[in-house]
Image 1 (cartoon, helix red, strand yellow):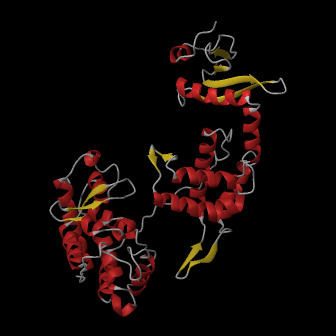
Image 2 (spheres, rainbow, N blue to C red; image 1 turned 120 degrees about the horizontal axis):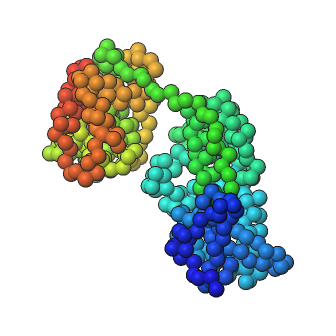
Image 3 (cartoon, rainbow, N blue to C red; image 1 turned 90 degrees about the vertical axis):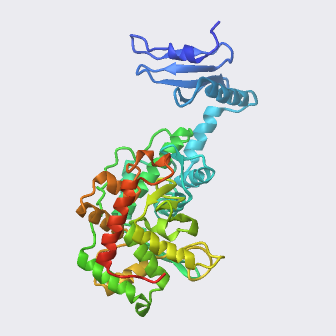
Amino acid sequence: MPERLTKRVVDSLHPTAAGSEVFAWCGELRGFGVRCKPSGHKTFIVQYRNDMGRTRRMALGAYGRLTVDQARSLAKVHLGNVETGSDPSRDRQERRDSMTVNDLCDFYLTEAHAGRVTHKGKIKKASTLYTDDGRIRRHIKPLLGRMTLNEVNRKDVYGMLAAVTAGKTSVDVRTRPRGRARVRGGKGTAVKCVTLLSAMFNFAIRRGLADTNPCLGIEKPGDERRTRFLSPEEYARLGAALRDCMLHGVSQTAANAIYALALTGCRKGEILNLKKSSVDKAGRCLRLADTKTGAQLRPCGEVALEFLAAIAEDLADDHDYLFAALRGEGPLVNIRKPFDKMCAVAEIEGATPHTLRHSLATVAHELNYSELTIAGLLGHSAGSVTARYAHHVDHALQSAATAVALELSVRINTSLAP
């Protein structure tokens, strides 16, 4: 009698010298076993006879991804279904044959919102899923949605990459009374769509819904890193435009947010979502609850801290966001239009709000700070390995943040009223 299938049994299984597959069957649960291929790869399987008397064999998952106990639990479910007249292998194949890319997209988003899809070991953030949903609705579904998973091949993926790059999925639609979506496509969006589609196919493979990923081996255009930064003269012109923002139809709140972006080098979302509790004068930092790399204590220069603290002190008791929306509740969500208007007034071309982040890094480099220090100022994950455990910002980082913010305030040469 075969013994009960255990981790010891699976670990002791090795391919034969002849290069043939080797099987080990569980003596306790009939039909449950593990297959070792000539490569040494081990997969849990179930074997049974369907209602037509035909022997079927179905893979449950790879050893390593599944433990023996997990595989045994899955085997019990499938073998139990066989006893009621089901054919798990046939049912799986039917699902694979009928599931479309549209279906996969919907299933992926549902599972991701439920916290059952991870990226680098972490549950996807709501903001990431919002972006994923937009790329799915605007690009992936219109181009590949009606195809079944086993129909999609590399040629189709290259076709999607070319179509999005050429702007064939671009659209300008009204989304709400005061909102609209301007979808332009382009090379960067195309690359991100292929990356997302690849992640969804990998997810489908893990769930037993697909066998291959057609995105593997796709040659994607190189990532053109943004190198634009502001010169001292451009900083001065931007400062002049911010001082006269009201004359050019830009609110003081938006101008204050742009100034804060320039002094801190924070990401746009990090600044717009700042609350009273985010500004820690005593700790000489910003307490950011949600960033690209998780919650952070971000070093903040004294000039920037004083400016943000003054805004926080002037807020009414029932207001929490430092840069509140002019209509309704919550923070400002559109800083791009005011920024573009200020740049037009200042005769600055080719800049975005993110340019201010690159510019701060450039100024820090000009002040002879190391790449490690600059990474810490920007909140990059490599900036400080101990940041996850420390409750106070490193004094060297805080000193650097103060020096850089002071230099930036001199270049901008403006003092905005909170």
